[in-house]
Length: 287
Ligand SMILES: [Zn+2]
Ligand SMILES: [Zn+2]
Ligand SMILES: [Zn+2]
Image (cartoon, rainbow, N blue to C red; front, side, top):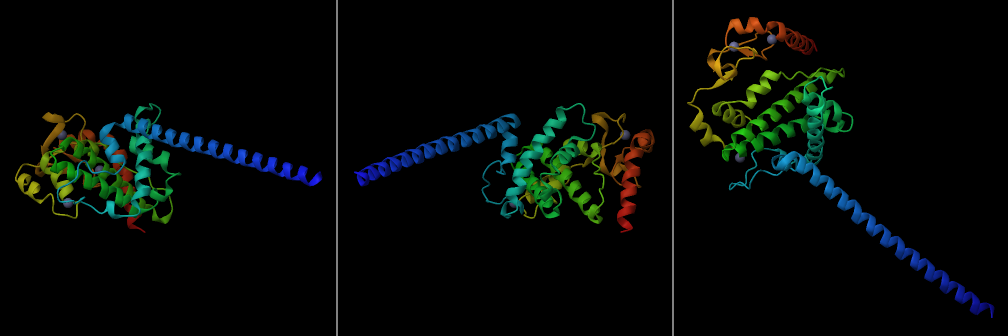
C-alpha cells in the first residue's frame, strides 16, 4: 500500500533528523565545554606565569577588601574599565616577552606599546582610557601603602608614571603625526627605589580620596630623597641624595643630578634624550 509506505518513510526520515539533531547538539556541547576548558587553562597559565601579584593586578581586584570600601580612584566605577582590563593583560604579556627578547632595542614598556598598538588602538588613542589605567595603578598603590607593601606599591608608581607618559605623548600627537615616547630609565629607577616619603606623597597626590592622609602626616617630616641620574655617581646607594640639594636639567626638566660634576659627566649620554625632549616641547608649543 503506497500510503503506508509513505508514512513509514516519513517516520524514518523524522527519526533520522531527530538523531542528527541530537548528535549535533552533543557535538556542540562537547566543543563548547572544550573551548571553556581551554580558555580556563589559558588564563591559569597566564596567571601562573605572572605570579599571584600580577594576577591580582590583571583582573582588577584590589589586594584585599578595604574596611572603608574605598577603592581610591575612579577606575572601578567606569564602564570603560573592562576594555582597559583586557588590554592590560595583553600589555603585561608583551612586556614580559620583550624583557626576555635580546633583539628588542627599545625600553620594554615602549616595546609592549608597539606590540599592542594595532589591536588596542581603542586604548592607545583614547586619553580617557589611559587616564583610567593611571587611576587604577594609583588606587592599587594607595591600598598597598595602607597595607605596608612598599615594594609592590613602588611597581604601581612605575606603572602609573609610564601610563602617564603615554597619555602625555598621546596629547602631544593630536596633530596626527607620530611622536616618539620618551621614558627616562633614570626616572623609572628612581621611582622603583623611592623612599617612603616620596612614595606616599606620590599616591597621596594622585588619589581623589583622603585615605592616605594619616600615612602622609606620618612621613611628611622625613627627608625626601632622589637618585642622581649619572650612572657613575660617587654617592652611596647608587647616588641617593636629598631632593633639596639636587639640580635638574633646565632644558628638559626630566633628569636630576647630585652635582654639576655629575651633570657634566652624564651629558654625553643625556644629550640624545635631552635634544629629543626639547624638540618635542618646541613642537608642542608652536601648535
Ligand atoms: Zn580611598
Ligand atoms: Zn651624582
Ligand atoms: Zn635635559
